[in-house]
Length: 183
Image (cartoon, rainbow, N blue to C red; front, side, top):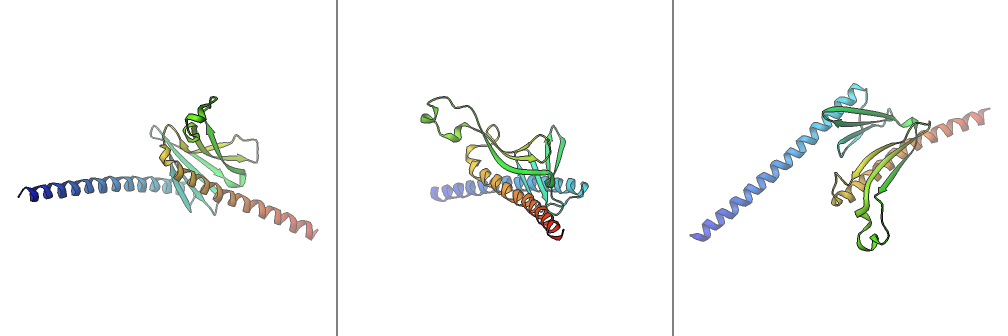
């Protein structure tokens, strides 16, 4: 009889843990959907339709490939801060890795990733405007266990957006070449 009671207790505990896990997972999914809905509504207000979007840290980003614009939404104390970047004004997009200072001999005791402060997607502009850095990893917010996934994400965004600005630069080059050949 005690074996049956033990099995009932174990099964009950497993079921309760599974339900808690599912509930937490559903909350995370529900929160993400609400954030994406908010980003979508904000994009609509600015006449943008996002082909890709991402939540990174406390920021949400969406890119409208047709209009060649990137919207960055950041919430600060329930106030939305919006930055819209026209990819036509961007000269380069790079991944910038920032480390804390490393004293002599510290690398013998600690790994390089332990000094990592942040990883940014950096936008350089054609005019004299200040560069914009969009953090994908910040050591105060993220765990080092998140690092591989966040590195993949920032590189994917860098490649995708660089191709978009490269296509525009190629088109300008081709248009200039046609004009020079025609003249």
